Image (cartoon, rainbow, N blue to C red; front, side, top):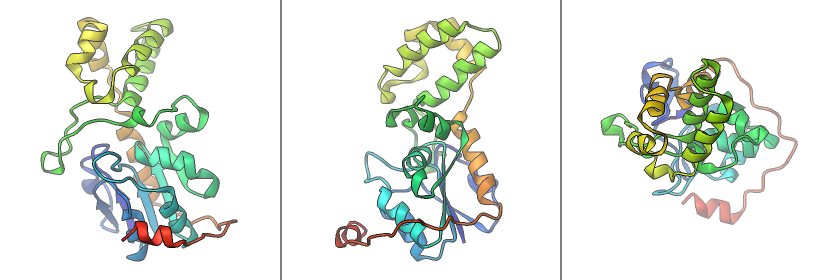
Length: 225
């Protein structure tokens, strides 16, 4: 069984994967360990809770890896956890993951956004900064703005709290003309990375052999109850 935890990064994920892959909502504390207990052979973490519910902890990812389960991460919470757990065998994919590895991205909030619940298709309410950064790079490549302008706009928009970074706020911060360019060239990097990760999950992947020992502490057991 292959399990992917996906939400706002790729709302239509269930329509894009084979029937052998089970799509579950964004992961919270205990969900990855639970998937392992239910027989998952590979897990792809894309979206996860971090505020209204306790997030996936590194320890349960290590638990999955210790049970010979391949664990992939990309796009959002998955990219963050993959960067943190890469030394232990978690595999990261996509530009966002790479930006955490090389230090271009160093803030958890860069992947965060407000969105509607699953009943409304996880419709985005705010704009994640990782998508803005990718869009600004596209604007520079298309000669719609200079690198200097992109840096200035990026710094300005990154300083806006993620819960307030709406299209209306964007217009106030950078002007309607530049905001219009961002709309026209908008790059949904989270979606692109999620697609790459799900494609990898669909291929034959093996879990790396751990070179470390998992310590299943009483605290870890209690955290999953």
